[in-house]
Image (cartoon, rainbow, N blue to C red; front, side):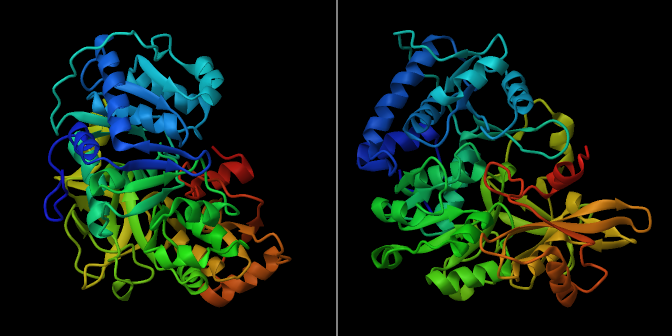
Length: 497
C-alpha cells in the first residue's frame, strides 16, 4: 500500500503490514544489539501470534497488555496484537505501581506480553484475571477487522486524578503515522531514530507508525544516551530523528559531536511533546547545522497535530507550526473561534483524533466542543496559520489576578548558558493568591547561584514575573517521553498533594 499525501490511510494495520511484507525490506534495526527485523519476518511472527490469541478466545477489540521497553521483543508483541485486531494496551514502564495496576484492571485485559525485567513488578500488581501470554500451540482464523475497530489503548500520564484511557481506532492510529509522513515528506529511503519509549504516543505514532505508513525503517534503542546518541545514529544510517526538548538540550550541552558523514545524510531533527525554548533551538541549530522542526502532539491526536513546514525557510521559531493533515483553531471557553492573534484554547479536528476515553463518557464529552478536540493548551494563531503555544490551562500562574504563563519564565531561564532544564510553577501565596517559583538543572560545570538566576530573570521578565525562588536540582521530574512535569514540582519540593 502507498500513502497518499492528500487522503488518510485506508485499511487496517494488518493491511499495511501485509503490504510492506510483500514489498520486502528492513523494518527495524537495533543498534545496541545488532539485530534486524524485516517486514516479512515481522508479518510472519505477527500472524502466528495473532492466530494463537484468537484460538485462545481473545475477542476482536479486546485489550491485550504490552509491558516492554523499546526493543525487538516489544516491537513483535506490539504488531502481533495489532495484526490480530485486538486493542494493544501499552503500559508506561515509568509509571508507579498504583497507576500500572489501575491500567491493568481498567483495561480488562486477560493476556499480557511482559519483558523479563518487568516480570517481578507485573506479578506484584496484576489483577487475578490477567495472565502472561503462553502459546496454546493452536491457531484460529483471524478476526475480520475494519478501520473503525479499536486498535490502541494508552493511558495518559495525568498530574491529577486517575489516568484516562485514550482509545484509538485502526484508522486514527494509522492517521498518526500519516500526518508525520506527509509533513516530513518521508519516503521508503528514510530511516528514523527511535529513542523515545514506544509506550508513549510520540515514540509509537511518530517513529513506529510513521515508518510503517511511509514504507521506511526505524532504528530503535532502549533509551536515550547523550554520550552514545550520535554514534548510534551513525551506525544505523538514520536520516531523521524525533526527540523532546530535554533531549535537544542535553545534546546541546554534551561534548559529543556527529560525524561529518552523519551530518551530510541527516535531513532534519524533530522536537515535540512540549515547547522548545527559542534560545535552545537557535543554539542547537548553530552548533550542529541541523534544522529542528518543532511540532505539537497529544495522546488524543495520535501524536502530531501541529508542525512547522519541512523547509527551514518557512519555520517560525517559537511556533508549534501549522495544522498539516488535520485542522486547528483557537477557541474561547464557549467554543467560539477567536480572531487571529487572540489567545484561547488550541483545538484540533481530523482523522488522527481519538475515538474516546475508555468507559468514561463524561470525560469524553467534556474534551470536545462538537467535533473539535480541546487540547488544554493555550495559544494564539497568526495570519499565516502558525500557532504559538503560550501555556497550559491547568498550569497558568495567577498572581494578583494577572495570568502568567510558565513558559515565559522558562524561556528567560533557558537564555542563561548554564541552564539545561527549567520549569516555572505556582505556589500558594497569602498576598497574591499564587506566587512564581522555578526549578532548574544546570550544566555539570556550572557555578551559577540561585541569586544570579533571579537577577537574570529580572532583566528579562521584570520583577513582578520573576520567581521568588529558583531551586537548583540535580534532575527535574519528567514523564515517559522526557517532558518536564512542572505540576509535580510542588510535591517534589514541598510534599504537596
